[in-house]
Amino acid sequence: DQGDTRPETCWTVRNTGRTLVEGLEGIAEPRALIMLKRVQGDEQYREVLEVLEAELSRLTGIDMASHYRDGLMTILISSPGRVTPYHMDGEANLLMQISGTKSVYIFDGNNREVLPSGELEKFWSGDIHAPVYREHLQDRAQRFELAPGLGVSNPVIFPHWVQNGPEVSISLSVNFKRRVDNLAGAQAGNAGYLRNVLGGLIGNAGQIDNLAEGSIDNEGSVENLSGGVFGNAGSFGNR
Image (cartoon, rainbow, N blue to C red; front, top):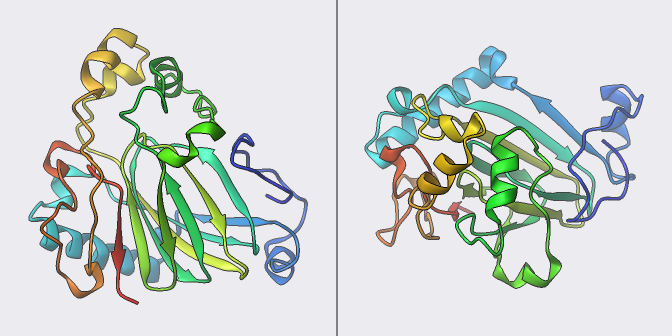
């Protein structure tokens, strides 16, 4: 994808007609985004994913393989100043910074002023553009500053947008989808089920500290993980 984007811009991936090599060679100039999806299909990246899942299992005390399907890894390479528009995901996500810097703004998906029920229902019915950015609610977001060695956890259906720093950014994104999904009825478009279930699924915001060193802060890190979601937006890592 290439071009100017803002938080309120609809999330799209457009074909620029350039080859991957051409895109990488010119990544520092245009406001471009290159997404290398499902890289865990390569043996070396697969080994990285296996180590990550084993570490998460050790830190949380939960067998990731039993509760989650295999993680989906995406490498994000983007231009200085590039904005990833406001959107949300149907899976829990870990975003880890490899090179460059970025600011991540995460909103509380439980707040119906931020995310009205109608938008939530449309999203689970297949409309990925359903969440609407409201600039007057920007101060409701938690801001996380990422640099190499740092990352952030983003719960299911927590809207967010991202602003790159002045350098080319390289990040690793890993999405985790539950094996048993309590939101199956909502995904089928059952609005009444959605209203009754979603309220209690997502925990309050917390923080993950020193994940790279293998310890988790007592204040709350991945609450409700055993129930099938990463319950808190939170930072982690070691600079």
